[in-house]
Amino acid sequence: MRSIAMVLAVCLLACAKGDAGEPGPPGAEGPQGAPGDDGNPGLAGTDGTDGMNGRQGPVGMQGPQGDPGSVGPQGPLGTGTWVWKDANGMVVPALLSVFQLGGNQVGQASTRPLFIDTSGYIWAVNAETLSVGETLGNYFGAWESTDCSGVEYASNSGNTPLPRFTFNYATDNTTRVRNDGAVATTINIGSISPGSGCQAFAGGPTTVLALTDTTIIPSTSVPNLSTYTPPLHPEL
Image (cartoon, rainbow, N blue to C red; front, side, top):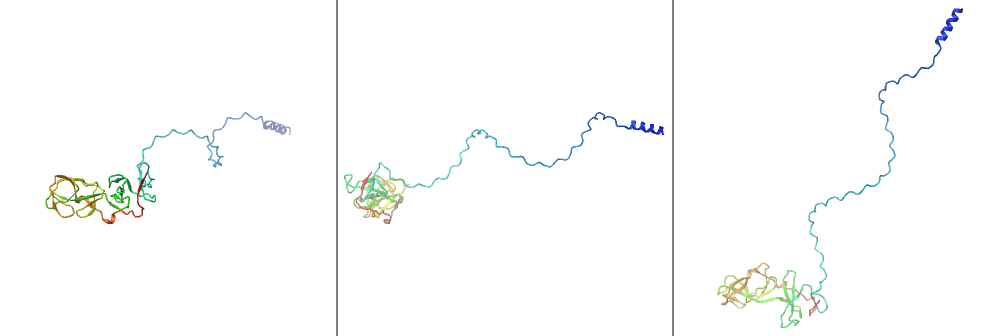
């Protein structure tokens, strides 16, 4: 019995727990774990301050020319030149400040203002009666031949009409105008026809205009100013 007790005592002494030892060294790093779930979005940050203005860029290339604009309305009558008015003070449009002197003095009833119609042709207006007629007269047929054959010319002692000024052609009693591009020429006149048949004529070099370089104006195209009250008078 005593031997058993001793064995138990020795066993208890041997099996008793000792003090904790020093920690051992860290173990090796384990493998990386799987990625976690995305977190919630963060709050919006505050606005930053405005940046400085950038430098001005270079001038761009000139663009293509635009289409012409529409014609504007007619402006008011200008100053410094007169207009013609009728007895009631109404302005007669298209009357020029220049005029044709029919008498010996400016201001006589034979003074004729010049009128431009819608075709650009120029007429003489009787300021006393408002009748309208040619600005020039006494033109007649002329030929180089002695029997009025060949090329027919309009003549008035070497005075050719300017383009667009109306004139009377006595040979056939028509109203005509010289065409814009017509060029006068010089001939030795051998015969004429002033409206009373062919006549021989011995003339020297004379400036004339070929009749084919003129245009006949029908009587229906003569301007009518009957809506105005005569006489006319000029005003600035």
